[in-house]
Image (tube, rainbow, N blue to C red):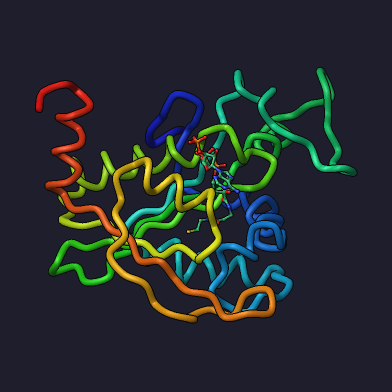
Length: 211
Ligand SMILES: CC(C)(COP(=O)(O)OP(=O)(O)OC[C@H]1O[C@@H](n2cnc3c(N)ncnc32)[C@H](O)[C@@H]1OP(=O)(O)O)[C@@H](O)C(=O)NCCC(=O)NCCS
């Protein structure tokens, strides 16, 4: 069952059947190259256990992003991916086809109600506005339900798609950690961004034409 829905997406808790899709995502260098702060190495079954223990169960919020069935046609298919059709398609085939990634909030310091946000989607779904849709939902849920004061994030220099999403959703650049990450053979900066509860409400009122 979905925890929440947006126009194109279902946002739900993680389940054991997400393992293969999650590991495929973590082993896809198109994804890890722009998002992974740790060693980019193959991830197997042990990493699924580790992520459940150290990430899913300790985060303030993790949602698996699943595309609604009526938007399945927006998916791009990689060469060699097996695409089942019609009657041969079981629920598990739909689950794999519609898995799009995950988004998370982690408390940096609970006392200050400051949570760190991250979103990662598989390339098959990039370019459909989904990260923007998820980020808008995270802001709404984070400020209106979880009573956060700040949402913070870091984005690698050169990750133009992610930076664009965060700019569009009202995050502002607050700083920069110089040459913090070794990516593709060079040191790159991490751009630090944040949005405050007051920024969120001001933007919401502005978009609703109230201010
Ligand atoms: C970054 C990521 C989440 C974006 O997801 P997405 O669903 O494709 O994003 P959206 O479609 O909502 O928005 C992307 C925006 O960036 C723009 N964009 C895409 N590539 C771009 C580029 N190379 N240069 C400039 N803008 C770019 C798009 O045009 C779009 O802006 P628009 O709505 O004004 O046209 C996705 O590519 C991803 O998961 N990447 C790997 C993991 C990652 O980097 N996560 C973020 C870590 S900070």
